[in-house]
Length: 251
Image 1 (tube, rainbow, N blue to C red):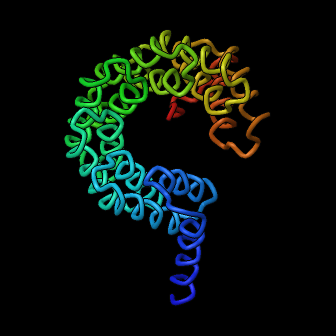
Image 2 (cartoon, rainbow, N blue to C red):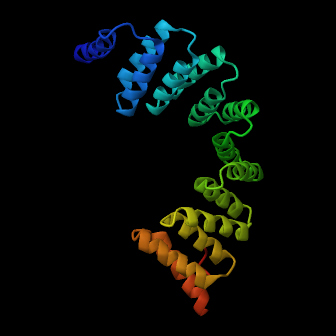
Image 3 (cartoon, rainbow, N blue to C red):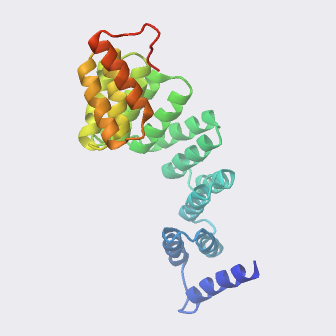
């Protein structure tokens, strides 16, 4: 522990030794150390920035991000809240706090944070995506689809939004819409084995057996260890050939 403390002292001393540094200098340095995976030095640099400029909201947000990445979600929420207290229109801090609240399974608090972020910044693509994810986890599939659709409108190449929207559509039984969204995913991510598999299951559900088999074959090519792909391919082959055991069902 003493060695670690000494190393942190050396890091900060090296910053001071080249003249008077500003809060911005320390915050930039914190970002450098974070990019190098040195979270302790990054937090120490943030603390130095705060000691120089206690009302620097961006540093509290950055410190919250460091704690979030370190899986200290409660600590991250405290930092994001400090940033919001200093700058009430800080959309990114609300968004980040929403992510941390979701990690702690505080779904309603997360939704409140995403709502506030979107109130401040109406075209916040990631906030629509993340709110959609939480809505889906709470069973509001239509709300989930609506938010993913808005994220896609703002960012038409948002593959993950297409993918998640397809899952929600499948749960509602909208299999043709689901398939169209997986088509989009695969145009953006041609090697997405999960998208091939899910599209194959959707095609199987609407009796498009040959196309389903093609998707399962592609899944197996990309992910040979996928036992689910082999199983569903077997179901599709049985359906196609009429050799269908009534006990077989799609999981």
